[in-house]
Length: 319
Image: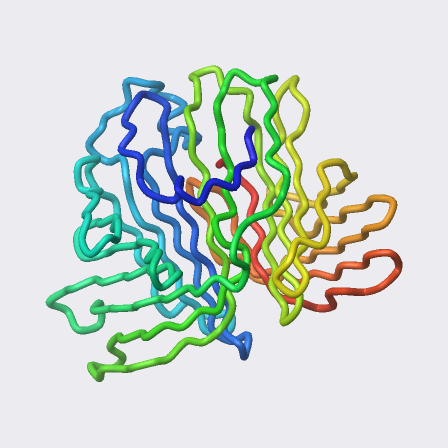
C-alpha cells in the first residue's frame, strides 16, 4: 500500500491492464446534518466476488459504473446504481480542464478555479426517475502535507490518495416528487478521495476500514487495510484550521461487529495521546464494495476532546 499526495493522479489514467482499477469517492453532509450523499465512480473492481472468481479473464462488458445515494435524515430519497461498458468512461479535454465522462454524468477538477465538480444526470421518460444534481467542492486546505508511506512487503501496487479531505460543498439538486419538480440547494462540508492500483490474482488483501469526519475546525481521516501474512497499513490524519495537526501510522484499534452478521457496530482507536470512539448510526450502503454508514465520532487528543458527537462516514470492505 502506498499513501500518496500527488493530486495529478485524480484524473483517469486509462489503464485497462488485468487487475487494474480506479475508484473515486465523493461524500458530503449538509450544514444542518439532514441531507447527506455518497458517490462512488469506478473502473473495474478486482475485489468483488465476481472478479475474484473469474480472475483476469473476467468479461470486460460491465467494468465501470456509478453508485450514488442521496439521503434526507435516515431516509433514502434517490439512488443511482448504473453499470457501463469499459469504453463508456471517456476523458474530455476542453478549456484547460480534464473531464471524466460517463454518458451525461461527469466529474473533474477545475485547476484555475480550484474546484472539484461532480454532476449526476439521469434522464428518463418517467418523471419519477428524472434526477439532476451539480455538486461543487471547494477545497479549504490548499495541499496535502502528510508523509507518503511506501511499503514493498506486498505483491500488489495499491494506492490511497485523499484528494481533498476538507471542502465546502454547494449543490443544486432537481428531481420529481408526485409529478412535480422539486429543487433543493445543498450547502455543507465534504470529502474527496481516490484509490487505485493493480491487484494480482493472489492478492493478500482482506478488508479495509475507513472513516471521514469534518467539523467547523477539524477534519479527521483514518485508514486501515488488513493483509494476509503482511503488516497492516494504517494512517490517521487530523487537520486543524486547514493545516495538518497530527499524523499517525501506528495505533491500536478494536472493531465490534453484530452477533449474526459482519456489520460493524463500533470501532475504538487508541494510542499514547489519542483516543477515538466511533459508533455506526445508519447503514446507507450494502453492496459488492462492502458496508457504508453514517457514524458518530468522539476524538480526544492529549486529554482534550477535539471532536464530540460529530457525524461522518465510515465504511468497511474491499478497496
